[in-house]
Image (cartoon, rainbow, N blue to C red; front, top):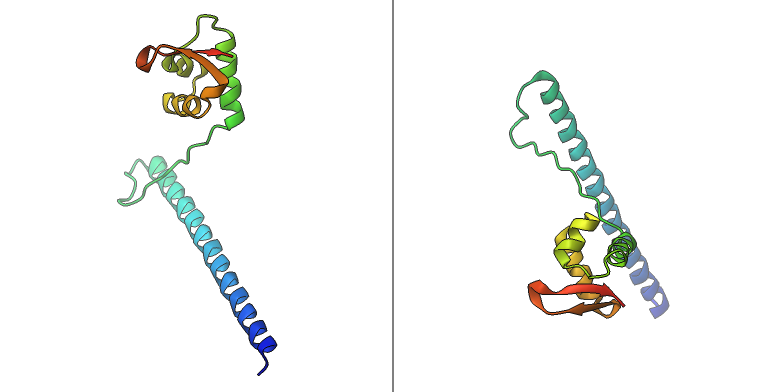
Length: 127
């Protein structure tokens, strides 16, 4: 067997393996979605019949992620309306964005804002 044929065989075996992995991940995702559908249907049946949801059935609602552009726009708008600056808590309350999200955004974007003091008394301003 020539080295060219051997390398082609190895390449094809690698492609087959990649296809198997992608097929497996697709099937796992389909199974996950099916389980969520079944759980939602069981919860709806339990609600209609007044019986408790069967043990082990957990109905999960996925949370929606806030778009980073929306976070930035909300924080910039809140700070533009506050000439005396705002604390992280005040920004979170004003924008209705979670405190943790505001804190992480400000931490990763310090160069975009002016701030005074430190720790809990820190106030943020637009540059």
